[in-house]
Image (cartoon, one colour):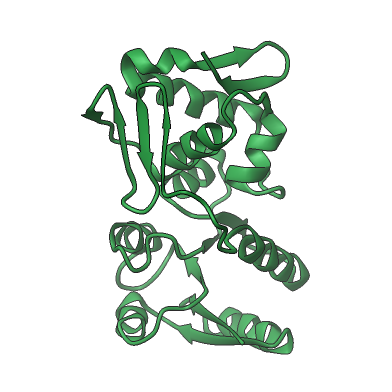
Length: 224
């Protein structure tokens, strides 16, 4: 049975979500604050975490950062749950490593659908941990990128974007495909989100950034 942790301080919302998850045969456990959540996390790692941003002790963004910095939870799927709805907040949460973002109020059917979609995307696949393209090297297990032998500091989503392009080297990837793979098919961001991340990725890769090619009117590809 799929184990899910829910961090939500509103008891009514928490109980409603837990009930909905359990009717879907998911083993859901709720926490009203970050402290209780991390205590449980030290004993057992869930398959997915639903995390509210506004919490009474440590806020959800801070918790998300800690999760992504810890090796044992760096790849655990996280769905952010919040009343904030601006594009900046969505992009910030996703760029820090969230796998999806759902804004209150929402329907339980929508939440369940997003959970299932994130779990499908996070299913393990047989992939080579270290991949290389020209002078770029990416180690998926260690979450490290180098260009010309120099370490490159990327955000969580920039790393996923580069990895997706490297595993599909030479193929033209439309903005829609990139959005679907990196942000999820139901993410309501606009294509400029992809363009913004491509721009910063090129900058951070330095001279190696020229391998990221723009295909006018379609999207991007990694090629010589």
